[in-house]
Image (cartoon, rainbow over all chains, first blue to last red; front, side, top):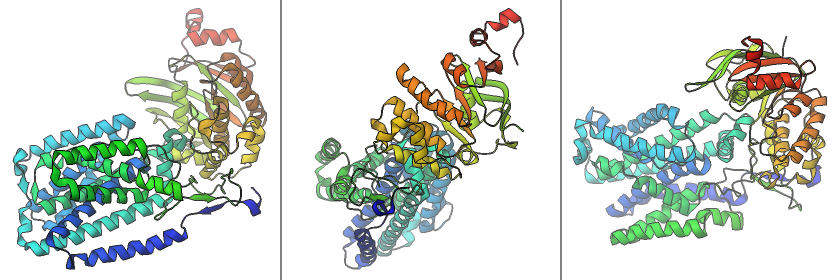
Length: 357
Length: 242
């Protein structure tokens, strides 16, 4: 096409992103040995952080990359915990039941996706909330749960408190790492390009040959599975299961908060948002109502002044990408002409021009 | 063998039967216009051919191969390209980027960005402009160009003139004239009867999901089509169309 001398360069990784990859490995290794040096309370808090990262990353994948904004993701959080209780009651080892439960949640989300994904935009968002409320009521019907009284993951008692805490910490860390790696691989590949094309315009994506429904379903099921793991892990840390707590819309509100603050549609943003949320909660969580008011105010301020969130803004200003899932076009001396070789599935100018939430 | 044949196609939207047993064939290089009132089933028929709607009965054959089990995203690769109603572009991307995306279906052929720009000269200065900033006519040209980039055997054009001013529609059709003389097989849905008759070899007028009138554009008068359009032919001839 265009002359070779001025042809733009398509890049994925940069020098910074390669350093970041090493840093990520180091951080995970440090986190893995951290419990040796942390107090029991700190280990529990870190476990909560890992769960927040999972929640934020999953909601971001769904909404930020796939355009599927849902306010009913608590349904998978609640079901993750509920199935873990059920499976443990049926005699499965408690730690095994956490992960089998997440798989069950993933399986349940498949038939759910058949009709939910026919809805678009606001209908989908609210429809998911309806599903969550409905599921909450259905779970209450289970005798084992004893209505809103709830029940506990009693079988965890066979482990002493120290072992339990460590095991859950490592399981949470491993789950978070594995899920983030899965998501990274998915979003970086051709499916990731398809996902973003669907977000930008579903009909346009279909007309250039993107498999729309199947791709949306894959993302929906992955998010359900991930949030199911988060719910099961949360159950393991808090032991008690009260349907009202787990099927509460606050979980989705937290996910939205983390993603908006961190930067919707950026891979790093969700992680950063989870960290910010975690810090706010750690410092101000004790202040009761003011904490919630503060959270709401922060979210409003961010959507008004930093609509791209922290990472979205950093990325835009400095062109910094630590964990690049998109493509970037670098133009040698010709600032007006982004072009590409036409073979890349979705050569967006990486993720920097997103405005869609 | 016909390039595309539609056999007794029935498409439903829930309880509503939008297309009721429609059959027709399209030969290679032919330009077929689908006309009819709002709600006659034209768009649904077009979308069913593209695979966006699953038919309740009947089938679509491309080069004799049954497409019933072929999902819509694979049909693009087989040579059926739909230009959706309302243009539907990636508005954050430039004209060129939108065009290049059409190539991702991976069909070999001689369509290129330059050739599309040749076809639609009004896009030339807009090559690197974001499609969200383009005028309706330029957007429509980009949407058609994107479909052409997949080197289709059959191009499905849905309501090219929708939402465009008459002047812009003239320009889009001027450009289409070049495409038409290039021998591309086209099925187009058009509300404007004069335009539909001017660019097509054959016309099908749909009424309430059925084919009310079909024939070569040369043999059919505007009055015939108007009658079929409003369903008047049924009273005058007493015959019920297939």
